[in-house]
Image 1 (cartoon, protein in one colour):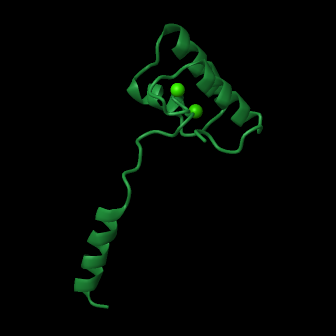
Image 2 (cartoon, helix red, strand yellow):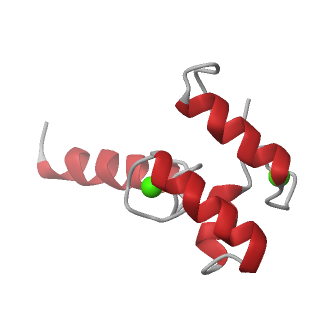
Length: 88
Ligand SMILES: [Ca+2]
Ligand SMILES: [Ca+2]
Protein backbone atom coordinates (compact mmCIF):
# COMPACT_ATOMS: atom_id res chain seq x y z
CA UNK A 1 0.00 0.00 0.00
CA UNK A 2 1.19 3.48 -0.77
CA UNK A 3 1.37 6.49 1.46
CA UNK A 4 -2.06 7.66 0.30
CA UNK A 5 -3.78 4.57 1.69
CA UNK A 6 -1.73 4.65 4.84
CA UNK A 7 -2.78 8.26 5.47
CA UNK A 8 -6.41 7.51 4.60
CA UNK A 9 -6.60 4.51 6.91
CA UNK A 10 -4.65 6.28 9.62
CA UNK A 11 -7.03 9.24 9.67
CA UNK A 12 -10.01 6.85 9.51
CA UNK A 13 -8.91 4.94 12.59
CA UNK A 14 -8.01 8.10 14.46
CA UNK A 15 -11.37 9.68 13.75
CA UNK A 16 -13.43 6.56 14.43
CA UNK A 17 -11.76 5.49 17.66
CA UNK A 18 -14.03 6.07 20.64
CA UNK A 19 -13.21 8.93 22.95
CA UNK A 20 -11.12 7.62 25.81
CA UNK A 21 -12.18 8.90 29.22
CA UNK A 22 -9.46 10.91 30.93
CA UNK A 23 -9.78 8.87 34.10
CA UNK A 24 -9.84 5.25 35.24
CA UNK A 25 -13.05 4.23 36.96
CA UNK A 26 -12.25 3.58 40.63
CA UNK A 27 -8.87 5.33 40.48
CA UNK A 28 -9.96 8.07 42.86
CA UNK A 29 -6.44 9.23 43.77
CA UNK A 30 -5.40 9.28 40.06
CA UNK A 31 -2.22 7.23 40.46
CA UNK A 32 -3.10 5.08 37.44
CA UNK A 33 -4.22 1.95 39.28
CA UNK A 34 -7.02 0.79 41.52
CA UNK A 35 -5.85 -0.05 45.03
CA UNK A 36 -6.76 0.26 48.71
CA UNK A 37 -5.43 3.82 48.59
CA UNK A 38 -8.39 4.68 46.40
CA UNK A 39 -10.72 3.55 49.17
CA UNK A 40 -9.00 5.99 51.53
CA UNK A 41 -9.24 8.76 48.91
CA UNK A 42 -12.90 7.87 48.34
CA UNK A 43 -13.71 8.03 52.05
CA UNK A 44 -12.03 11.40 52.48
CA UNK A 45 -13.78 12.59 49.31
CA UNK A 46 -17.16 11.63 50.73
CA UNK A 47 -16.38 13.40 53.98
CA UNK A 48 -14.65 16.57 52.83
CA UNK A 49 -15.22 16.67 49.07
CA UNK A 50 -13.32 15.20 46.16
CA UNK A 51 -10.07 16.77 45.02
CA UNK A 52 -11.38 17.61 41.54
CA UNK A 53 -13.92 16.63 38.91
CA UNK A 54 -11.76 13.77 37.67
CA UNK A 55 -11.61 12.20 41.13
CA UNK A 56 -15.35 12.66 41.44
CA UNK A 57 -16.00 10.96 38.08
CA UNK A 58 -13.60 8.12 38.90
CA UNK A 59 -15.48 7.60 42.18
CA UNK A 60 -18.91 7.40 40.52
CA UNK A 61 -18.65 3.66 39.93
CA UNK A 62 -22.29 3.08 38.98
CA UNK A 63 -22.34 6.15 36.73
CA UNK A 64 -25.44 7.75 38.23
CA UNK A 65 -23.69 11.12 38.42
CA UNK A 66 -22.99 11.15 42.15
CA UNK A 67 -20.17 9.46 44.06
CA UNK A 68 -21.81 7.94 47.11
CA UNK A 69 -21.59 5.13 49.64
CA UNK A 70 -22.93 2.49 47.23
CA UNK A 71 -20.07 3.33 44.83
CA UNK A 72 -17.58 2.87 47.65
CA UNK A 73 -19.13 -0.51 48.46
CA UNK A 74 -18.70 -1.56 44.81
CA UNK A 75 -15.07 -0.44 44.87
CA UNK A 76 -14.45 -2.43 48.07
CA UNK A 77 -16.08 -5.53 46.55
CA UNK A 78 -13.94 -5.15 43.44
CA UNK A 79 -10.75 -4.92 45.48
CA UNK A 80 -11.77 -7.97 47.50
CA UNK A 81 -12.39 -9.82 44.21
CA UNK A 82 -16.09 -10.23 44.93
CA UNK A 83 -16.85 -8.58 41.59
CA UNK A 84 -14.67 -8.79 38.49
CA UNK A 85 -15.69 -5.53 36.81
CA UNK A 86 -16.45 -2.06 38.04
CA UNK A 87 -19.55 -0.21 36.92
CA UNK A 88 -21.53 -3.32 35.87
CA1 LIG B 1 -5.48 4.77 42.46
CA1 LIG C 1 -22.78 6.76 41.87
